[in-house]
Each structure stands twice: as C-alpha cells, then as structure tokens.
Length: 327
Ligand SMILES: NC(=O)c1ccc[n+]([C@@H]2O[C@H](COP(=O)([O-])OP(=O)(O)OC[C@H]3O[C@@H](n4cnc5c(N)ncnc54)[C@H](OP(=O)(O)O)[C@@H]3O)[C@@H](O)[C@H]2O)c1
Image (cartoon, rainbow, N blue to C red):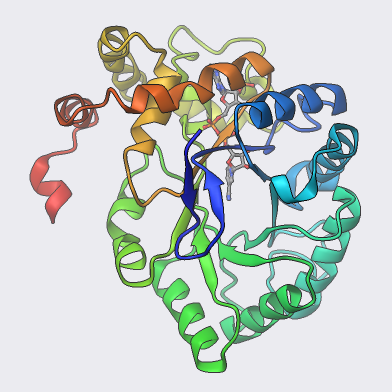
C-alpha cells in the first residue's frame, strides 16, 4: 500500500481506503464489518470513512463495535465522519451546518463510535442558509477541543471552499484541508475542472467517493440487476435508471477488452484509473463482502500498468477528447 499526504497536511492516508455508506448496518453487521475492516487494515488501509447520517447513526455504531473488537492501536488508523443531514427533523437539526448542530453532532458521533476523537470531520454538503463564518468557527472549535484533528468539505462548490479557507486565514483558524467529492469514470468534470484551482492554489486534499459509480463500473449490472446487489435494497430504487441505462452499460462493456489485456477485473481497472490522478489523496472504496475488499485493493498493482496509451483508450470509451481535457 502506498500512502499520500492529505493535501498539504502532515498526515498520510492509504491511497485506497474503506467507507461504510449503504453497507454497514443495511448489508453488513458487526461480524462482517470486523472481517471487512480487518482485510482492509491487513492490506495497509489506514482510513475508514463514516457519516452521522449513514443508516441513521447505526453505521457509526457498527463501526464502533467493530473497532472495539479489533482492538487496533488508535494511532495506527484514521476514522472520519460527516455532518449535514442530521438524525432528526427538528428545525435546527436537519440539513444544516449551524454551530449548535455541529457541536451536538460530533458529541453524538463520538459516543456511537466509542472513540475519544475522530481524525477528520466533514461538512457533508454546503448549507446555503448558515453563514460560512459560523461553520468555520464551529469546525475550528471542535478541533481545538481535541474532538477531531482536521476538517473538510464534501461536494461544496470551489467558490464556497475558497471562502471558507479565506475566513479561516483571516481569523487564524483551522482551515478545511480536503474535499470529499464523487469521482469516477462517469463523473469527472467537477473534480478535474472546477476543483483544479483548489489543488493548484491551496494544495487541497481529496478523499474521493463512489469509485465504481455505486457498483456499475464493476460490470455487475451488465446482465441485469443481481439479486444481492445494492440496487435491490429498500430505498435504493433511485439507482435503477443509472444501472440499466443502455449508454452507460455500453461504456462499461467497452472497458472489458482493456481489463482483459491488463489481466484485471473491471472494478480493479476503474479504481486503478483514479489512482493515476495525483490530486487524489485517497480513493474511498465500498464493499458489502470481504471478497470485494480483496479484489479492489489489488487495484494499486494495476495502476502501474496504466500507460498513457491505455489512459487514452479509456478516455475514448468515455468520450473525453484531448482538447476537452485542456480547456
Ligand atoms: N461524501 C459523500 O457524500 C459520499 C457519498 C457516497 C459515498 N461516500 C463514501 O465513499 C464510500 C464508497 O462509496 P460507494 O460505496 O458508493 O463506492 P462504489 O465503489 O462506487 O460502490 C461500492 C459497491 O459496489 C459493489 N462492489 C464493490 N466492489 C465490487 C467488486 N469488486 N465487484 C462487484 N461489486 C462490487 C458493492 O455493492 P453490492 O452490495 O451491490 O455488491 C459495494 O458496496 C462510501 O462508503 C462512503 O464512505 C461518500
């Protein structure tokens, strides 16, 4: 496993990491979580991603119980969590980054995770109604109190991130250090275009999510929706359009010859492709069973085989032209 700095911070994260969205609680109980996290940790993963809203707090509980059982030295791994949607519908508790909510949020997460601190906390989405200054101060305070060490954003606009950095600089507060954006072969534009100035001008980090576009890029939906897949879970019907879209499936199939030539699976190829981007600090993978962890973590070896020629072929499949890359 290779480790990359999280942006301009001193902390290094495994280039492949593991998240618990959808899986923990819905598909994976504590026993399976122990097995999955253990496989990842043994392969060198040191970054485990969670969020307050995942399974309405239960995903943090599962990870907390798993960590208790695993008994790893706390300094040997990082745990992250995120706030925005909240756990209740109260007027000050839902879809907000207000100070009260963020501070109550971190206290609840630490309790569920059974930890004294998490390593990175994220603002899970931007909040257009709370002044960014209030959010920056709250995140700074949480760090000052030792409940987290770094903070970041998730799916914020580049302008909002620059505003938060500037407020922090003006008041000598802890700045946000990383984004958590979606980035995969289908979803490139924001990461590669809008965020380019964040990486260049601020050395912003990135912990990217959904490397397989929710599983689609593994090829598992090429012959219909498998019975045991995420798309069959209650509440995930919204995935059906995407995973049955003929155009998207044709692109996934067009990757097959490339994967065959490189002697790897489609999932490994898609994850390896992300590792070729130096602006990626870590690729957060997801897995509902341990075999997927074993398969996906081998992607690092495949990245070495992705020559400029191979990358060009992949771009062609997804209709990305050279000029488009350079504009
Ligand atoms: N900040 C945010 O807003 C945000 C949003 C989304 C995700 N995330 C983070 O990013 C993490 C990863 O996202 P994601 O779970 O959407 O990632 P993903 O890699 O796009 O999808 C993972 C899912 O694909 C399937 N899969 C994984 N490896 C496979 C393989 N080798 N072969 C076949 N199927 C495979 C599994 O689902 P099946 O059960 O169908 O097999 C697995 O749960 C999350 O856990 C979370 O921590 C953050």
